[in-house]
Length: 229
Image (cartoon, rainbow, N blue to C red; front, side):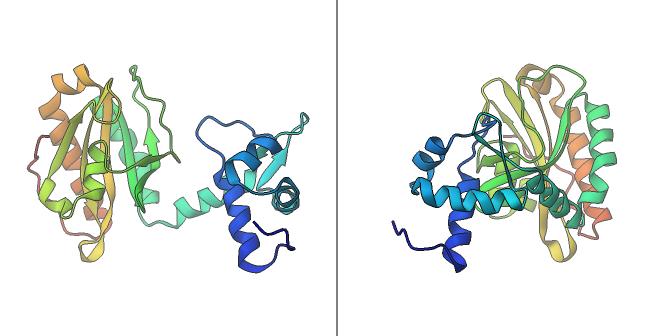
């Protein structure tokens, strides 16, 4: 590990390593925790934190710990708005959640993970605290299976039970853009018993919504038939 002045790509890489040290459930981290997670010297971390703070990417709390800053949310919002699919999601997911009584989500792939781009929660209880912006490792879950499939179109609608979370089940289907490109996975999730009781209805609702969104994006319509898992 070098103690040379930070410059160029190395400084950016290390700053990103610091931001990447934050995990699900971390409200704030101390300097010691950041050092332990990144393997960087505390002096190096402090120099980089000063730059990140000026850019509002981190905020220093009164107790000396560091929290993620508002600029990250701003950039995340810009990213979501840059995607052609984003403008269609609020109304479509709200309608799907209302029709099914379950939580409706849209997922996109990022390397070996899937990102929840948008989510409308069920009015009913669900033992799942996922939210827009969350990342989940592939391929677990219905959405994960769709996004990691060699041929998502051939899957139709996928249903999984307790695969990612032992208390929940999910139904998902691929959404396609122009030229047959995979735009993401549209899905429903809820308690296993509720999903199983309305399985056929949920398969049909997701297939219809995914076809509708594919049509709006100018993609080829996906098959309506489902493939239970």
